[in-house]
Length: 408
Image 1 (cartoon, one colour):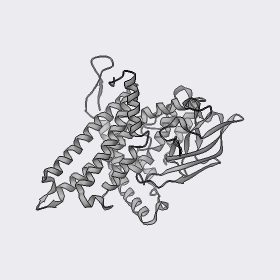
Image 2 (cartoon, rainbow, N blue to C red; image 1 turned 180 degrees about the vertical axis):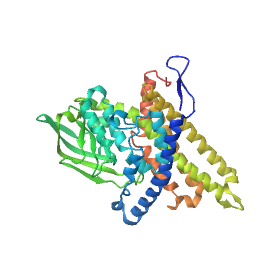
Image 3 (tube, helix red, strand yellow; image 1 turned 30 degrees about the vertical axis):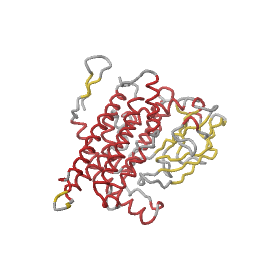
Image 4 (tube, one colour; image 1 turned 90 degrees about the horizontal axis):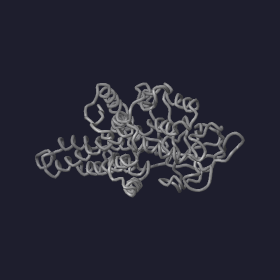
């Protein structure tokens, strides 16, 4: 998409014309999502339905194939082996992958989220240490990673975490429990763990890189209502030792790292919501054109076609807002307000669209024979992760309290 500067400083003008490279990248992601992710997800869902959550397993070779296609590390800097794509194009690819399957897209995106955490530290992290981890994530066979914020009693309230890191010679020793962590699984390359190094509140938190197989780290998979093809787990840290250079952003600077991370990640979560909404919308349109009632396709009924029209309009509006937030991130602007707008609006749209898609399908929409009921459950997750949508509205209110009522 061509992003050209507007006539005045600080005024953005976005022309919605995709560049040739963007079209090619989107086509690759769409083909992989439809031909590989969706069939794999269907098979995984059947296995878990028949044998329980213990049957979860990503099909052999799928991660490596995604890596070979450049779909695991496209947002990681080129110097570290990634694709170096801008936020707008990254959002396009995330939408495509999520339209294939939200759970696998989430899991396969875990390495890039981890990378985003390291990059959020900026100059406050040793370049050699950061590059070493980023290069591991860009391994040809692919890699999983995780960011460990949430705890049983501290979800959106990051400042209330209780996991503790104590000085241990030249390094640190970390103890605590994290939960609802995507990619927290045996075989993950690394975790970015947020732990308390000082007093209570936001000012006493630091971030640490913890090798996924470090002594004292263990995992348990959670059984959630949505994103079931992903691996969302609990992480237990029992006196885990890390070296002094494992700290990211400096002692007691973890909260700042987290806020910078969220500024970049929330628009991408919003793009994931777009993918879910679009998949459900497309399925509902196809069904409405094929399903007949009272001698005519149900698409001919105003009650159905109007419902679908509202779904389509909401998706287009959400996409414009997501791209606007990503464009702001690419320009180095403050993304706090528009990023929260995008995350909350797009995930609310995904919830509404998937619910309406179930309605269009009627009784069939309640059946596992159609994926819309699954996408509805997936959409619900995105209203909660990366800060609940109520928290996003709180963030907006804080901007308003400072007199900021419009995105620059």
